[in-house]
Length: 118
Image (tube, rainbow, N blue to C red; front, top):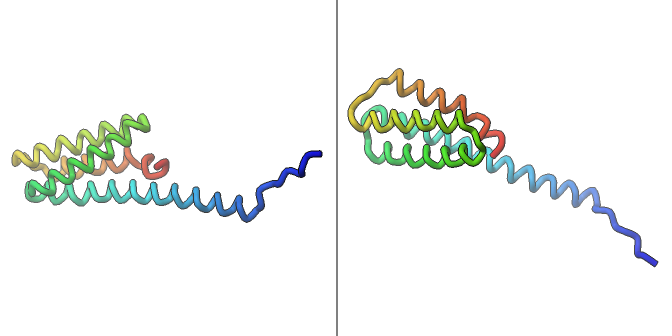
C-alpha cells in the first residue's frame, strides 16, 4: 500500500513565495541603484572631466549595457552607448550640458525595463 502523498503546507508555500519575492526585489533595487549611480557619476564627469568619475561612470555603463544585451534590450543598450560617447566627449573637453542631460534622460527612459525584470 502506498503512503499518502503529503501536500506542501501553506506555510512552506508562503515562505518560498516570500524568499523568491525578496530576491527579485533585491535584484530590481540593485539595478535601480546602478542606473542612479551611473547618472550621478556621469554628471560629475560632465561637470568637470573628473577622470576617476568618468572611469567609474564608464564601468557602470558597461555593466548595465551587458545586462541590457543579455535581456535583448537593444534600445537600452544603444542609449547606454550614447552615454558612453558623451563621457568620452567630456574627457576631451567637448561639453554640452543639454546634450549630456539628454543622453542621461534617454538612458533612464530606455532602461526602465531592466528595473522591473532584474
